Structures are given as C-alpha cells and as structure tokens.
Length: 412
Image (cartoon, rainbow, N blue to C red):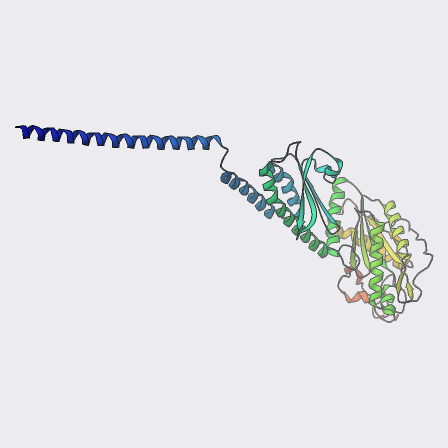
C-alpha cells in the first residue's frame, strides 16, 4: 500500500515538474517575442523620425537630370537648346534664375532665364542679387560659367550634386551646337569674299521681300559687276583676281549695315539687298559702294591693281511677290550702266521709267592701269553659260550672221 502511495506521489511530482518546464518555456518565448516587437518598433520609430532615405532621393534627382538630358538631345537648333535650358533648368535646380555664358573662339552664347530681353547683360558684373557660380569646361579648358541665383540662401547639397552632373552636359551640348553652327555658316558663306552664297542670298532676299510687303516698306536691290575683271586674270593670274574679290567682299562688309544682305551672285558679281530702303537712299548707297570699290588697291607682286564697278539698282513694288522680277530690273539697270561707259550707277523702277542716273566720283587713282586685252573678235565669255552666271547674261545676237556683234555694254 505504501509503495502504491509513493508511486502516485512520484508521478504527481513529475507531472508538476513537467508543467513548470512548459510554463517556463512559454514565458521565455513570449518574453523573447515582446523583446523582438519592441526592437522592431524602435527601428520603425527611428526610420520615421529621419528624412527620406538617401538612395530614394538620389534616384529621384538622377531621373530629373536624365529627363533634362533627353530634352536637350531632342532640341533641333541652338535656339531650341537655349530655350530648353532657360525654361527647364531653374525648376530642376529649385532656383529662381540662372545665367550662362560660354565662348568658343570669338563666338559667344548667352542664356538667361526670366527677362530674355536682357539676356546679353551680365548679372554677375551688374551685381544683381546673389549668385553662385560654377565653371563650364570642355576638354579641361574653361569656356564659360553657370550662374545660379541663391536668394541670399546657401545652395543645398542636393542642388550642388545636380549642378555637378548637369554642367558637363551643358558643356557638351553647347559645344556641339557651336560646331553645328560653324558647319552651317561654312556652307552658307562664300569663303573667298566672306559674302553669302548665291542660294543663301536668294533665300534671304525672298524672306526680306515678304517682310517688306507685310510691313508696307521699301526694299532695294543692287547688282554690282566689276569692270574689265577678265583683264586682271589675264595679266596677273587668277590668284590676283581672287585677292581683288576678297578685298571687294571686305569692303562690302565694312560699308553695309548688319541688316543688309550681301552675297556673291556669281564670278565677279555681287547682290546687295537693302531692307527698308527707298530709291534715293539706295542710290546713295550704290554710289558709295562704287566709289569705295574703285579706291581699293590690291598689290600683285610689284603691280598696284585697282578695279571699278558698275551698279544696277531697283526697288520692290507691291506686285513683286517673288524676287525674280526685282532682280531682273536690277540686272537691266546694270547692263545700262555697262552700256553707258561702266563705273556708274543706273536705276530702273517697276514702271519701266528709269530714275535719273547717279554719278560716281572718279577715284583718285583711276581705273586699272592697263587696257583690256580681249580680242574684239572673240565672243563674250558669258555666253558659255558657266557656273554661277545669270541666265540674262546669255543674249541673242542682235545681228544675225555678224560674229563680231557684242552684248549690250561690252566695249572693245
């Protein structure tokens, strides 16, 4: 009996011990779970108390820079690039104003946000507000500066990081646009005279004629032909003739306004377009150009060569929708100047009534110091239809069967 009681007590004690162990295990597990929850809660509180994670912010501004770069790539002209920079860059940087100036050789580009009419002014020199400046470099060479308005507040670190990524992009884009502009200029400018090519001159004349009609303004056209130019090539060679053409082109550049158009029309001929110019003013310009051309002295070896010019002038009419009729009148006036002895100015208006002839003061040194060497029995070289000649240069022989007949204005 006693043994049975002892066994029962032992079993009871074992069960109690097992229960205690289970309770302890449960308590330990729960304590560990509570500790883990407290740790997670403290981590979440710390994360909520700090700013947004840096990696998220970095991804955001890098995407902004990438979008800005794509917009610059889509810009198809320098003007569009400047507009994109002026409009998009300030919001990206979080500033009110930016100002950029770069110089490649003697070519300068200026970009300003806000008041575009004052873009050429330098706010850094004018001390307008507070600015932070950043150099713009191409191939480690400084070419310009980026100015960012600070509004009397230091720039945040994020803005400086963005500027560090954007400045090389600006340098590459502006440099590429400058190279493209150079290539376009080379394709539109005659390298010998510095004047526009015939095609570009005609395009600009057409645009100016449209603008003149819209504004009810006059537009004058001058056709200039160098007298006896073949004699220079015959006697001194084409290199000397090229030097004379270069000097004439430089004289046109220095004499005319910036708004005037000058182009090499072909050979030794030049087309000059004078916007907002009436007949009297056009005559004065023509006389001035002819006089200054006659005063040009070109030295070919020991020879001092001078040349004169004949000028034909016409002024646009309301029915001149295309430049062909206007150029044809100036061309006819030019041939009249040739027929009247050269080195003079003649004017032909749209009503087929010529204006009074404009006299050209003779240059002190006179014409070229030799007579023309052309064979009087040789046909006019303009009848060959060479490149750059006008269609009106080829004329019907006025006397059929007479091989010595010459075009109007040709002198033996």
